[in-house]
Length: 448
Image 1: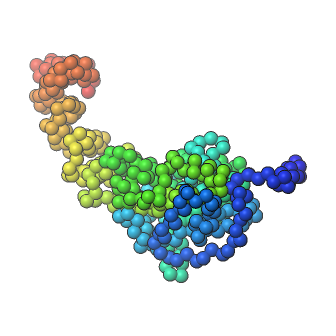
Image 2: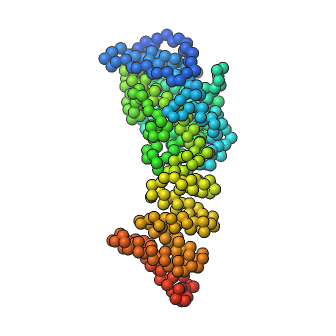
Image 3: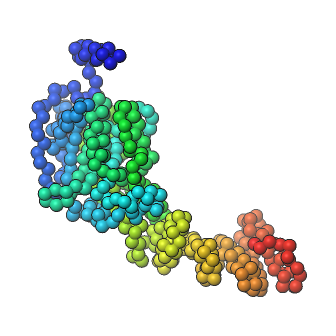
């Protein structure tokens, strides 16, 4: 079957039938790529005016890029090299190396992260022909990694690009060779998108891969848990502006437009608009480094200077994971900050619940009192106070007082209060307390 396919392909070539962009214009002789200086980001060349009808190939538009030959064909590769003191928004690349992936291990449920340094990880991001489906492929794979050099450590962004679909085996082979040098991955939504997509492409090309089995820090989940309350959107582009202090240049292109730009390139062979896609992917890669530093810092070294909403989000996440001591510390720090009233109540509720579950209800008492004194739309703190005084200290008069306050507050809500689920329960509690205070037996009633 393979011999028959080879004969068919040879016949098609003799007839002049070609596919993809590489054959639309005779390739220029390749020259060795010039050495890339260790310097901040070099400006991307401005695409030639659309009025110019000449086809502009990648090699002309992106100097420094080269075709790398493999046993499975060739792939276009472009490197960008950064010094570690490079300033990206409000942060420097070297900031990440102050922290360890271990800080994220309990939060992403992967203890293997604790055994590595960020130098052991490969940052990865793809640009694809679509969002899903068996026919979707990654026409560009961006990777980033720290590496030593004669002039000191540096960060490299390497972009593998498919001139047409036939380059995919070479791309995957080059990617696999680089992966062999690294222990794990850092991505942004890679666990749900990039990794399954690439794994599928490896399988389609009958190449083994362990992508899914590697230690993996996907920054999207921590970003949502830590900053969604305060910032709303946690898309990488949104976080750049609201958190990282970065504004992209006009060279950028919106992500939704990228598949069509690549398809246009395949039809025409003109790479002018693809320059913007290379820029988009490159900035994504560098932003992941500074975002990872922000995540690692907040998870490992939160302090009172952090935004109180972020401290609340962190404390809530820690409480969910059973990290009670850290959760208590950060919820208390958040309570000292300037939280919106609704979130202030939610923060105190969460802290009080944490104390109660750890057998420290007396310490939760002033928190419930503070909520009850400042809340006019919620009676849950009143109910907790009534429970505490009835069952923990047997101060029935105080339990009755807090129950009556709750019922009065519900009555003030009008029609909404008439159907409130706690109304009947509180009325039942008040009747029981009144019987107790009158000396009547209530032994047949459960605590509640």
